Image 1: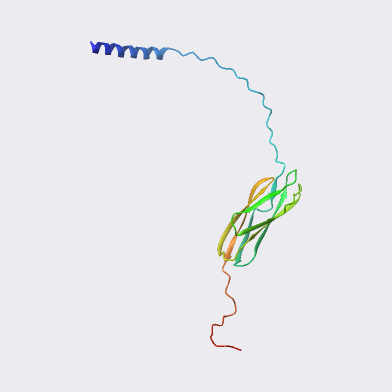
Image 2: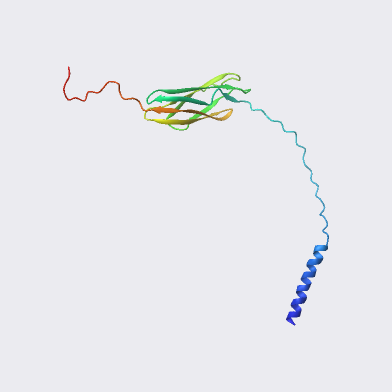
Length: 163
């Protein structure tokens, strides 16, 4: 008896599945939505822009202790005065200098960077982040510092006194 009831239940389930497959689903009514009109987008040009003459200064090979100073000339290519808000070196071995005065459209300005070569033998590649009303730019200084030569005059290590 239990087997008969189980067989009928399985047959009923299978029949339901077959009939469900043959039934065509009706599409749900489409919802209509109102899309607000959007004005065409225009590409807004920035009010201030900055263009560097060069973004990397290569010192080449320097002797340890030699001064290493670079100048980065830039032009305000925007429509409004450009203000350099901050110049941040990537490390403490680089010191930046810049004018706090606004640079008029079409005019040029200068950012100077000084690298301390004393005790820094080897290759270097340092970044300097420039933050202005035109956004953020990164400029670079690089080069190689060679160990300074020993004094060209021989040292007198003698214990004898010379006149």
